[in-house]
Amino acid sequence: MYDLIILGTGPAGMTSSIYAQRYNLNYLLVGDVLGGMMIYPENITNFPSYTSISGIDLTNNFKQHLNSLGIKPIESEAVRILQKEKYFEVFLKNEQQYETRNLLIALGTSKRKLNIKGEDKFMGKGVHYCATCDAVFYVNKIVGVVGGSDSATSAAELLAEKSKHVYLIVRSNEIKGSQERISNLRNRNNVTIILENEISEIIGDKFVNKIILKNEFNGTKELAIDGIFVEIGGVPNISLFRNLNIGLDDKEYIIVDKNQKTTVDCVYAAGDITNNHLGFKQIVTACAEGAIAVYNIYQNLKLKV
Image (cartoon, rainbow, N blue to C red):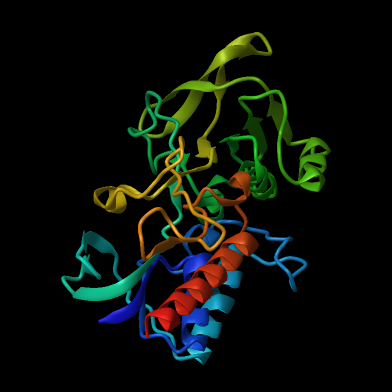
């Protein structure tokens, strides 16, 4: 029987494991993608001690920290969780099964899709969700980026360094996020920002060759492009926990209190999957939530001894 099983190996999950180790808990860290969504940003400038670092490099630094403490994540994912009277059974994809007194959910979010005609058809053939991964395929080509927050402007900035031209398509009448990055994009000759517009369809033959806009831009709704990068936020990964009847907000993020405790006893959550910080999803806040959760789990375990 474990004191704690941490589900998720993003910044919240990895930080949680560091504190679980510090408090000498009997725990497991489980996750199939080390770094989670943190691997995607090309240039992180707001994580303390780094003026600039890529998501992949920051993930590798986290990994080195875990290695230095002897923390070895189980490279799998949970597929089923059963709630017993005083513990939980966790079943993994690798067919292993474990029991734990406490759960810490740190599974973050998945990339949100546009859900428009042509999106699924051209996925990987001009439709992408990770500029860090796929920008290399669009050197001297014309691309579009959909979204109006930091992830979208970061993707546009990276693509502008490689591509012939970048269209940043924003549904609202303003762009949110880093004002410095927004200013840099506005000053680039190969970036066009299209506000108050959306894509209604993605068209191509074997690969994407154009998109259809909802509203006219420069007298037409058609825009010739070679690729489209979708950066419109995430969807919380909560399907695994629906049988636990955990409280969710109207956007299906897990409701937590100041101790990161959910509405279910002995179940905690941390990082992007929670409703904490009014939607302010940052690596540094995910780390803080993971640390807070494990501290309170440790305190509760002491009370039960």
